[in-house]
Each structure stands twice: as C-alpha cells, then as structure tokens.
Image 1 (cartoon, one colour):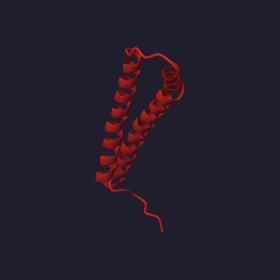
Image 2 (cartoon, helix red, strand yellow):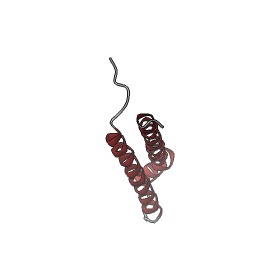
Image 3 (cartoon, one colour):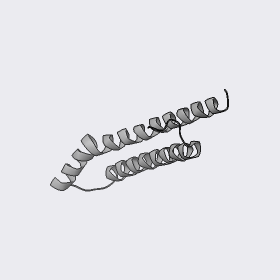
Image 4 (cartoon, helix red, strand yellow):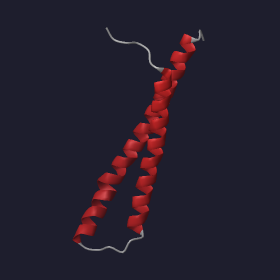
Length: 89
C-alpha cells in the first residue's frame, strides 16, 4: 500500500534546500561565465572549453536551476494544500 500525504516539515526543508541550491547554481554559473569573459586564455583547449561552456554546460546549469526553482514551488504548493486539507480549509 502506498503512503498518501507527506511530512510537512520535511517538505518545507526540501523546498528550502531546492531554493538555496538553485541560488548556488545560479551563482556558480554567473561566476564561471564572468571569469571566462575576463580571463586571457587562448588556444585549442580554451576554444574547446569555451565552446562547451556556451553550448552545453552553462545551459545545463540553467536548466538545473530552473528545475530546482520550479520544484520548490511545487513542493511548497503541495505542502500548503495538504496543510489546508488537514486543517479543514
């Protein structure tokens, strides 16, 4: 039999963790982008990494950040809904 419901305190912790980690991912992405832009580095390895950063890595981090933010919202909304039902509202 499956459990229906949730531990509201754990859900709040999960939402806060997602929000905090989304901010950290955004800061990491910005920091690397800015450092790359301000660093004099040329050559094949530089070109390869910069191409990968611009075409894959940065966008993947952006997708991760978006997923964390969106799921924090979902977890909070679910928790609020369960709490409202539990409190007769």
